[in-house]
Image (tube, rainbow, N blue to C red):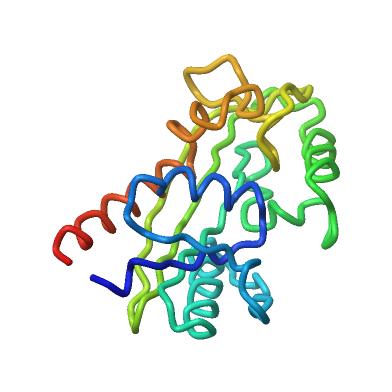
Length: 200
């Protein structure tokens, strides 16, 4: 399907762009970040679900460019906080909070909590024509008390996936991508695109 030879990545998060490009690198597809295009619309992520926010971003970029668009929304869901921060993960400490502020806010919220179980959940939306397809990835783990590691972004320095002793921030990008929520969702995207491109 020739129209899928070029896909817009509907994110301005540099860390996400790098991960998405690495995870889809084996495909004969040109991946273009939204930041590389002029006048791309800012999309308010005000939907009540990850699916809704991913759809809004993908559809907005697809409408603006006429090209297929891939967008994700990711939430950190902490058991002791009833699933928070969830869809508010990127703005947990406030509308203009950075990653460090969000991590500090999470550590404070979990002060004294014995239950540290958490999971990352990513929903990727692919908008093309009149269709939007969804792909989900989940990574179970726990939140540690002190940050560890200099890699990654977001909450990576506080999250240890099940079966591991290291945080995402202590892993190489390749190690993280093999087991991460976004990696699992994008592996599904890659399989879907590969099947379509074989038929092209």
